[in-house]
Structures are given as structure tokens and as C-alpha cells.
Length: 498
Image 1 (cartoon, helix red, strand yellow):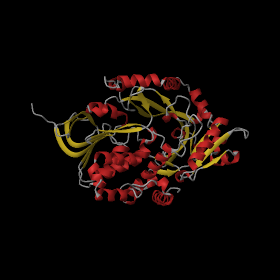
Image 2 (cartoon, one colour):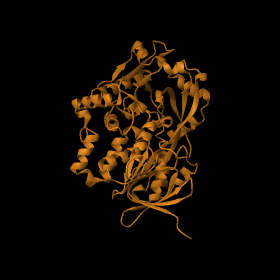
Image 3 (cartoon, helix red, strand yellow):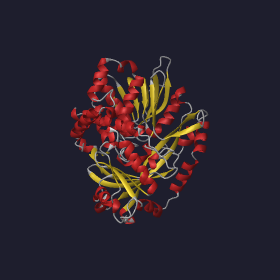
Image 4 (tube, helix red, strand yellow):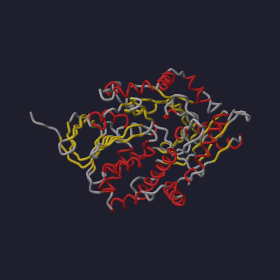
């Protein structure tokens, strides 16, 4: 019987058509224009999972308002390091996106990014004191110098009139405000990037194609077995480098790659839902992303926030997310994803992580059991005058939090993004969730540095990196003048408030 398998050769294979693969593909084509890249996506369109606008908060995660990036220590102090790092990374993303716009590689920036103030909002003596301490720890750094703090009732009404409706002026309230926050439609940005990539010589993009097997050969290259889901046609792709950026689908593919670096990794899926406002009059009253404090035991992705969104030119208002539990690793995945991911090498880390995160399990059970009345009660903590008839429940995206081995605990649950690469630099995998998309450019530059080490040391690649990222190799928080110039430039190109 004849073998009808299609065979192809490339230097790079990207698995998953989300923001990470789009970013990596564009960076590599800029650094080496003749590089041959193949991209495989199991769905019929790019950015349909985590990168899609309705599957994430659209917050340009810059640590301006997300309190989980500045946890309070036992002594009441705040360490700003993580927040500074994330803010730096978002500035790098702004530079790269500005480069793409200036070079006409993506269309008008209004399609994917808008200025929307970022705010943190708390109530109660203890939380107000925490927010003030956080403000002082952050605002002393150049990258947060524009942050304002207030407990003044009238000032808070100016910043967030809808949130303040129906409140008494003797309530103990506080907020911080950053006017240079953004709302990002990562779905629109990702699809624009792929539209450009697809037109370049040496780039092939395949939708409805699912990766079934990955095998590393003796010469360290990879053979990937793929099925065209629409026709059943089999493919074999041969490549020198593989990047797995498939969101929740990355862990099963890492397991299929069967590399020692993947041993001990597991995943814990968390689903989400939004309350979406249906009343245009209410939507018009709010113009900010207002983040609160997470409940005890809640994962960072479940920090409550009331969000102005601009999607496909229309203003929207969301509240949430409300967490839930599903054994799927993708919104369009299988209920068998979680059980099939449990292997001998990650069983102990997964059991240990589960034992050490009983409050999270309890939190998720409580969230799943919530009634519409419970969800409205949560919303009214942020919008006291909210009416049930103005809101409807929408399904959000699916996230898979990373579980990994730990010498002390046996296994720990991580709430960030993590890049794993083989020691030979031929395979890299991105696991985890927030702040993901917002910091994609920094994550992918780091990945290129790890996996294309020799090339990154050449003057040619270094010059091209500085062309794309003018601040490349420098720390903006340590260079206030460069920070100001960079923000001014990217604000002009992306048509944002500086």
C-alpha cells in the first residue's frame, strides 16, 4: 500500500497559532529573513484560545493595577521587584509593537490597543493601609512615577464614577490611578501578525492540523507527525527547532516530546466566566480597568476586576473572572485532558501540589457552586447600583497553571509563565498563564537567547534586536531619561496617552 504521507523540511516549527508563536515567528524572520518556518494549529483560525479577546482580560499587564504582583510580606512591607520586572516587559512589548506598526507589518494600532486607565481599588482599614504601602513602594521607581493615590471621596468619583455610585462618603476607600494603562485586543494583534507572517517567503501556516507525535532523532533534529483534521491527510515535518506555544495544550505535547527536561511537570486547569454588561448607558459611565484584591485561596487569574474593553471598535464592560474547574486543558479541549496528563514522572508533584493547595480547591468548589445571586453580590461590591437585568454570564478562557517538582514540598503550583527548553536548545515549551500575552516579547527574546545562543552573540543579530527594541540590553527603570523617551515614542506610534 503506497505511503501518501506528506513530508516537509524547515528550520523552525511553531505549534499553536497564538500570540507567543506569532511573536517568535516575527522575531526570527526579522533576525534571519531566509529562515524557513512552519506553523501548525489544530483549530481553523489563529488566536482562538487564550489569545482571543473574550478569553482574557485584555489588560496590558504592566503591574500598574494587579495587586497579586506585589504581595504583602509578613512584616507588612512590599517588594516591588516582580512588578518592576513585569512593567519593564510591557514596555518592551510596546516597543516591538511600535516597530511593527512603523514598518507596516501590522495595520493601524487602533485595531488592537487603546488607552484605558489602570486602577487598584480597596476598602477597609487594613486594605487601605496595604494599598498606601504598595503605592509608596512602587511610586518611588521611575517606571511607576506617574502613579497617584487617593482616599478622597470626590477624587475617587472623578476616577471611577460608576464604581462610586451609591456609596456613602464615610466609607473607608482608597485607589491608585495610572493614566497610561492600556486595553489590548490580543486576538486582533495576533491575527494581524500572522497575516503578515503568512505572506513572507519561507513561512507556511497550516490550520486544522493537529500534532500527534514528536520524536528527536540521533542528529538532534525533530520528526513531527501531524494529521490534517479536515481531510485525514498525514504529514511528517522535519525540523531543527520546535517551539510549543499551544496554551493549555502545551503540557500534553511536552509529554509527547519525551525529553528529560519535561519530567515532573503537571498542569492544573482553571476555567473562567465573565459577567458582561448589556446596557449601553452603564457601559458609557465607566472608562478604566479597576482591580481589587483576590479572595483568600484564589488563584491570581481570579482577581476581581471591572474592565472597560474595546473589541472590534465597540466598547464593552466586563466583571470577573469567576473561576471554575474543568478537566479540559483548552476551551475547545477534551474532558480527558487532565487524567491523560498524569504520568509516573509527575504523579507525586501533582499529588503534593494538590495537598498543599487545599484552600484553592475549596475556593474553586465554592466558585462552581455560585448562583446568579452570588455573582451579582460579588459585582455589587464593585458596582453597588448594579442591576441583574443589565448583566449576562459569558464563558471565558481556560488556563492551565504549572505544577512542577520541588525538593522540599514534592510539588508546587506556579501562577506565572514558565519556559522550558532542552539543554541542546532544539525544543522550547511555554507553560502557564498570566501575565503571558502582555510580556510575550520579553519571553520570546529570552527564549531566542537560550536556544539560538551563538547567533544572538553576533553583531548582526544584536543590531537587529536594537532596531526592534531600542532599549535592548538596558533596564528602563534604571534609565529615567530613556524610559521617558521610549514611552513618548511608543505612545505617539501606538496613539496612546504617554
